[in-house]
Image (cartoon, rainbow, N blue to C red):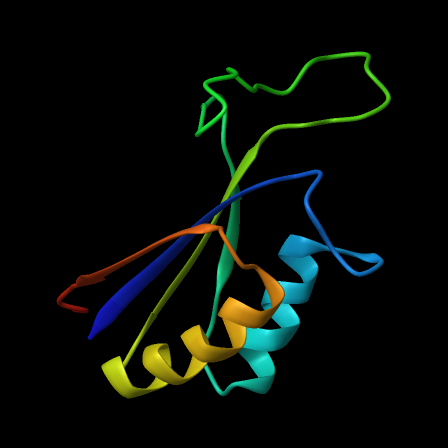
Length: 99
């Protein structure tokens, strides 16, 4: 089994859709067993800008993690589609044991 973790920002988009929603739809269409979107408290990336949810602001720009656990074949198949809708996103794949 493998765990796929994708790191994006809540303001990222794919076409006219929020990127997290586009990734979830793509994961479902690709046959992954499931995927979870986890809002993060705080983080920074390549730009070295610390991002965190701010209260009372109109636009929330905070880190998100999308996590899926599935077989290596399903993860590999999904990554091909993921490269088209989220090029340049940080993607981590690691071996896990599901119990």
